[in-house]
Amino acid sequence: MIKSFEDVKKLAKSRGPKILSVAVAHDREVLTAVNEANKLGIVDAILVGNKSEIIKIAEEINMDIGNYEIIDIIDPVEASRKAVELVSTGKAHIVMKGLVDTSIILKAVLDEEIGLRTGNILSHVAVFSVDTYEKLLLVTDAAMNIAPDLNQKKQIIENAVFLAHSIDIETPKVAVVCAKEKVNPKMPATVDAGQLVEANEKGEITGCIVGGPFALDNAISKEAAAHKGIDHPVAGDADILLTPNIESGNVLYKALAFLANSKNAGIIVGAKAPIVLTSRADNDEAKLNSIALGVLMASKK
Image (cartoon, rainbow, N blue to C red; front, side, top):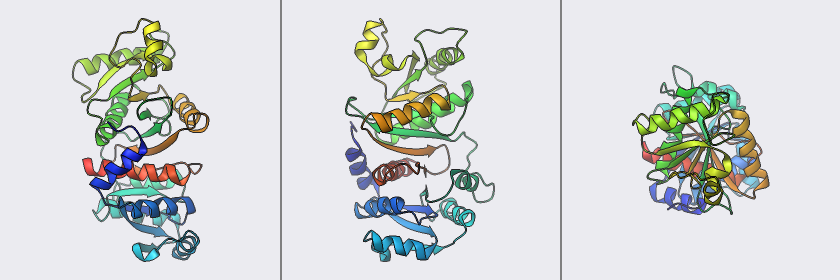
């Protein structure tokens, strides 16, 4: 079982290297992560952005720039388009956000001519390694979909399950997280949870076990679930937490990232190729972990 990001990186090394296309690459933390991933044998990289700035940063971090192809494009919009085009034309396997606004790179990803759209919903999956939990924990969606409806939640689950399969979680346990453990018509998230469980039981959502509604404690604590009398394979043993909306997802993400002494990674799923899209507040370790996830996803496609 994959229990840590060290396991993730080892698995990525065994399945790599893949070619990473970095949009607007002149960012110190991004280049540090890319360089470390290259040293580990996880990726080769094409750096798209301001060449002089890339070289300057490379010198500061002792990065051998001779190991990388650089495409000199100063404009962030054009650099993002080029980085995405490298993936859509098969010259790279993964695209990564550098020093550019998320909206700009996502516009390139969704471009009808050079983009990576599939018709499926795009969703963000965060992965956490927390000392108080015995395995990796996936959280979705904390960054992309504001208030997903039932059908969108199905696709968000499917995207997260694909990532879980990529890191060798054979049958991930999906907990639909709400404010309480019973379906209540006055609480729409609990109604959706009941319908998602039913869809899983009918074979409409496959490759996983879906349970809910669960309050957070009952999703990740077997003791809390037993105390409430909840008897379900997912209870207290979730691999994936599906949050009801972006506010709750973002609060949980930030709480785990900044209060739980966790290690984390983040990636966009649902496009033709993995999109490594981390926060500017994420350190180079989180970015390296995210690259490793992208390699495993690219290996799975």
